[in-house]
Image 1: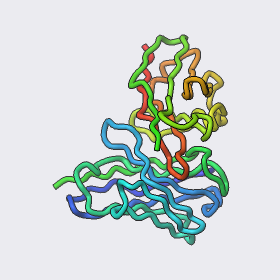
Image 2: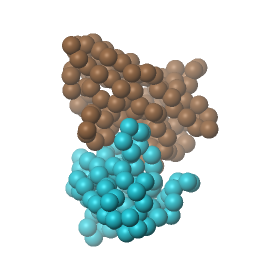
Image 3: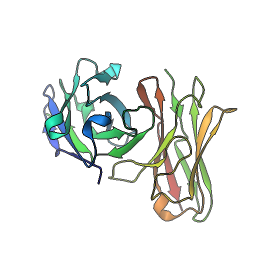
Amino acid sequence: QVQLVQSGAEVKKPGASVKVSCKASGYTFTGYFIHWVRQAPGQGLEWMGWINPNSGGTNYVQKFQGRVTMTRDTSITTAYMELSRLRSDDTAVYYCAREGSYNGYGYGLDVWGQGTTVIVSS
Amino acid sequence: NFMLTQPHSVSESPGKTVTISCTRSSGSIAINYVQWYQQRPGSAPTTVIYEGSQRPSGVPDRFSGSIDSSSNSASLTISGLKTEDEADYYCQSYDISNVVFGGGTKLTVL
């Protein structure tokens, strides 16, 4: 079945970087954009950007420009999200999610990873 | 850029019907598809409505979605409420190449 499995929880100090992985299975990895969404404790969903696994092209929310890098490794059908210069307000659950249309865009996020908790604390 | 505005919370009794609204601040609500996600505590979101009114397989037909151009809003209606429907609900659409989420609505079934 279609599945996105994320890496485990992380605890980081302010100023450090974190890299979260998202392993895709059960579908053609290069056919669907991967989005990254985060959720701070008790807060709503915040979209961070996407990566096109086929071309490697990315689109980041301006708020994260310069701090976020989304990459992929097609040989192991895995997408990555790296966030640098971490601050305490980056403490959140980070989700990857698949765009819902093959070679398309604008149809919703149909499959979500289980989430990765990132805690930033000194 | 636009925002999607949802009520912070709604509550209703089991067996009743509840509607959650999602109002787009600028531009037509009909330009881009609207999705609705359900999120239970400690779990990832799951889709209950996509493309405005379509239900994924496995989502009961008690869930329905609609668009109202006159109010520039989308709505999620849940009929025959069950206690298991208690969750946070988020609407989502697109702004050209960006994804936009509403702030979320906490549904309490009491």
